[in-house]
Every structure is written in structure tokens, then in C-alpha cells.
Image (cartoon, rainbow, N blue to C red):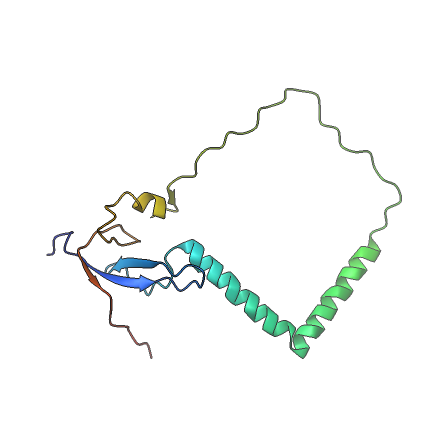
Length: 148
């Protein structure tokens, strides 16, 4: 059994085009991670969806879909007829509460450590972004698994 400080970590580069951060992951946690955080993963996914939607809108089928959406929207607007404007809502008399205080966000989200939590590690020692295991050895060229 290896000592925790001897854990071999795998070096990765975040695939989100605006990030490109280098991060490490231990072999126990490695599930083919491409992004350093959930935030980068979500941003990349949003960009992928945006590009796919744009490609769809440029096709004939996409243009017909947009036409149908606009037609339904105009019909919904025409169905609403406002005869008279109502009175504005007046808040009931009572005590005015002070604004909610700005409390710092928790350092963990869904049980996963965040960069703020993991920043407590020694900056010279790489650590796994998932579990926080520290290691002295880094394998910058991990063997990529090929799936059929």
C-alpha cells in the first residue's frame, strides 16, 4: 500500500476554452474528467448547446420551427385583451425588515470540495481536485483509455 504522499497523480488541462487551467486527479477518482470544475463543465456544455441550436436555426427545419413558435406567440398575445388597468398592489402596513446580510457561500457544494477549500493545501504539492489526495509524483502523459 502506498503512503498518501506517494500517490501518483494524473495531470490534465481544462478543456474549457477560456480556462485552460492545469489540474491533477488521482487514479481512484479519474473518470475521464475534462474540466477542472463543474463551473467550467457547465459553461462548456452551454457553449456546445448554443452552437448546436445555431446550426439547427440555419436549416430549413429550424426556420420552420421558428416560424411556428412566432405564430403561436402572436396568437397568445392576441388572445389576451386588457379592458382596464387594475390598481397597483400596495404592501400591507407593518414592520419593515432590514435587508438580508451578505453571508459568504459555503466552501463545499453538494459534498464536493471547491477551489477555496482545496486552496488550503501546500501550493508546491499537487493534489487531486476530487478527493484532495496529495502526491509528489505527477504523470503528465497518462495512458488514454480507448473505448470501442
